[in-house]
Image (cartoon, rainbow, N blue to C red; front, side, top):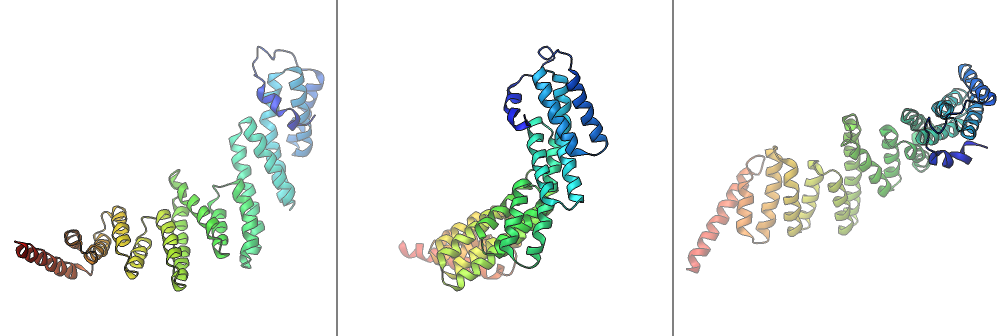
Length: 330
């Protein structure tokens, strides 16, 4: 019987030296010896066959020692067989072997082989998709890259190609999904920081262009929806926030301008110019809604940048107006 036929039974089996105390049979010894010989000769297909025999016989004889030995080798043999097929330009055969290495590596706890096989799979799919990508056939490229990404979501080079392919073909939903997944990796390990930075830049550029196109069509709701996705994905990028705020200002959408401005402020602490630019737009929003006291407070927060003089002047005007209004009420 093949490995898949009894993997579930093996998983349920408790391997202990007390239970598995029998001496190995001649057949078991021979099967394992033949396997190791084939491994030494780098004849991995034959080695796998003998390892399968070893597993079956060890399970039948309740021999824990030989079960463990065979389990240790068989994922590595599938991985090595895949490598050999890559050298022979048999990429489809290699993919099958790597998939088996991952399946058995996960089952037997060989995380190193699983990781290595996933890396190899994503490399193959990058190679397979490169032709279509370079010819700007993004739909075909995305179809190939997606298979590699499914196998190895930490291959950020492949992920970036996939996300770009999606966006170039107009599939922003999947493009955003992949870009945000790349960005999220940064929280797991610093080695992903460079890829995350690239993803933030690429995602921002694509969605800003998309918003501009929607704006030209006069589709305000679509623009707002796109900008919400953008700001949620990359909130600390000033260009993203200021574009949304300017869009609201151009639409004279004062309530959203004020609300979005307040939401943006925490992301730019320490940058006086950016904080001032945002506060100026917030102040304009409150000013336009006749919420004068809030407007004055926001204008006073404009301490750097090009709007300092205008903010100070308007704050004084509003303060004078409120003072006169109070005096008139008396």
